[in-house]
Each structure stands twice: as structure tokens, then as C-alpha cells.
Image 1: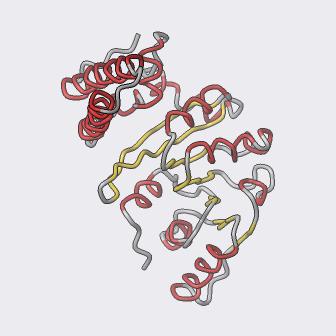
Image 2: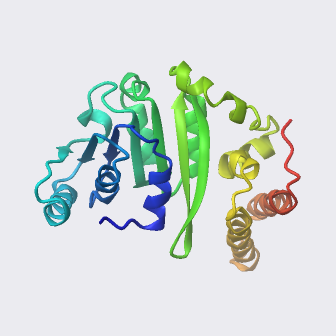
Length: 257
């Protein structure tokens, strides 16, 4: 039986029963193998840009399912897939900019798939901005602990997939990104969906961000004497904004305007 990490389990939970799935950047291949083993996905595709990860996936298949043939493909991003070939595409464990670049490479191909499960390692804010700027609806988000880190998982559908987008309207209507720039930027960094869901790790997630920013602020104030007043002001403003969001996460007073 395939044992998944908490991060991969959280991704697996966002896959619907019966969905066909492509795992882009599959590495060891555990997620698609688990989806197939559990009978959740009737067809899974394991894709990676490098031979090495696919060799690891092949070795794991030989170990766990020696009599089962899996669809392994080598190539860049979504280029290994035919248009609309699967229901859900998983892109996990990469940087947010890299994920955005994969999605942007062939937007028609990107829009041909029903939905995406994305787990960026960094630049989460940039990825959300790209999704919203390119006609995607962010339909769900999850936080999951992995070692000392808290990972962010994003589920999104293209507005062009009207049937899928409309099915989320009741939920998404509760989530508005503030037009005020201060809050819009912060909403891109800390998804409003996490407040709606009362995500259990949200308080700790924001507290960690405050600790990091306070360390940055302290370094700015105690560092070499240079003209850094602008950077100090930006860091102080960011701490204030994060504290407002922390208060909302603890009191459930997050308002949607």
C-alpha cells in the first residue's frame, strides 16, 4: 500500500472520485499510484521533464505494482498531454513562477483541462495573481504542515470552463479580493478562502509570516548605515497589515466588501 506524506494526502483529498489525473513533475510517482490504488482515478499520467524522476517512478511501480502498466511520459510541462486529455492536472512542489510559466506556455491547452491542483513551494502570491489575471477562479485552498513548513495548496478552474466555474459560485461569492491595494496585495498572499473555511493552520501560518517580517525589520534597523528609511517603512506597514489579518483569523471578523 502506498503511504503518502501529509502534503500529498492533502492534494489527493482535492481530487474527485472518478477524475482522470495528470501529475506534472511526478518525481517518485507516489501520488498518481495512490490515486490509482485507491480506485479514485481510473486513469493517471505520470509526467516529468527529466529522465531521472521517471526512473524513480518506474522503480516504485516495479516495487509496488509489478504487474500493472502505468502511463509515464517525458516532456516539458503540459506539452506531454493532449488537449483535454484528463480532468485534473496536479503541479506540485515547484516554485510559483515556474508553475505560472507552465500554465502560460500554451494557454489554449491550459484552458482545455477542467481544473488544477497547484502546490507552489514559493511565490504563491505571484501564482495567485497570474491565475486571477488570466481568467481563473480560485475555488479552494488548503494549508498542510510539512516538517517545519506550512504548505499552500490551490485548486483553480478556468472561467472558460463555465460548467465547472459556475458549480463553485455559491462558495466563491463569499470570497472577494479587496480593491484597496493594501488588502488586495495581502489577499493574494493569504487567501480569503482560508478565512471562510476557518483553516486550522491559518493563525500559525500568519504568525510565522509576522516573525519573518519582524526579523527583516530588525535587520534593516540594525544593519549598516545606508538610506533605508523607505524599506523600513514598507516592512513596518507589512507587519501592521499582517497583524490585522492575524486578528481576523483569531476572531473570525474577516469582512468581504
